[in-house]
Amino acid sequence: MIKMMTALVSPAQRRVLEVLKRHGEATADELADALAISPGAARQHLSSLRSAGYVDARQERGQPGRPADHFHTTDRTEAMFAARAETLSIELLVHVEEEDPELVARVFERQRRRRVEAVRHHLDGKNLADKVDALAVLLDAEGYLADTDGSSPKCFHINLHSCPIWDVATQFGQACTSELEFIRDLIPEARVERVAHKAIGAHTCMYEIHA
Image (cartoon, rainbow, N blue to C red; front, side, top):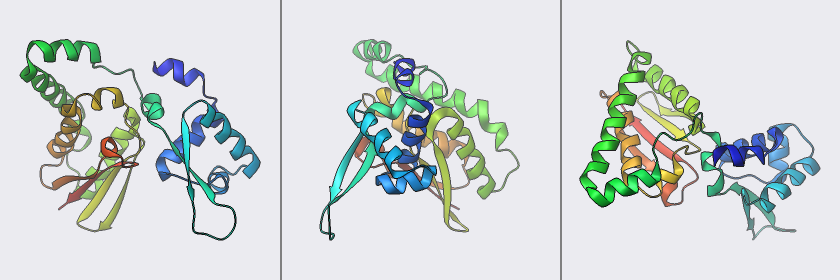
């Protein structure tokens, strides 16, 4: 599925989708500025992507002149930025849940522990700020389009603009719980809360990290 969708999108269009994901939404003019292309080229890309179902738009009314279209990506793009094919089979998870619902939770827990052990050494010996940065780099490499910001020296945010496990996460809430616990396991000295959630309509999943 990922390969099929990727094949239908040119490198330039993929960059358009990445910018929209990182910004949440943007007008054609804002997109043109971000990509250093002409507004006409931006509109052409947006038109093609909208026809393919990868982009939608809302009109911002209440301003003088013609209402501006604010473009955003659709759910169809969530798995496009995955660094690898999903390692969890939805069909298999459905069968497991039918046999033993509690086993599904244990599957996600085991996968989380394996992920933690695989990357923990990247964070060893770092202070909190450096841990947050390193974790964002790791998540970005997995296809989450991750970045960070800090509202204070003791409060940081990790923003996940895409979800490479979207198909699984929308059917199994344990996947989202596992992502939160994954971050908590890697930064045990901090308090970690999810303050925005793509699964309930936000443009990004945002994790707030307090020292």
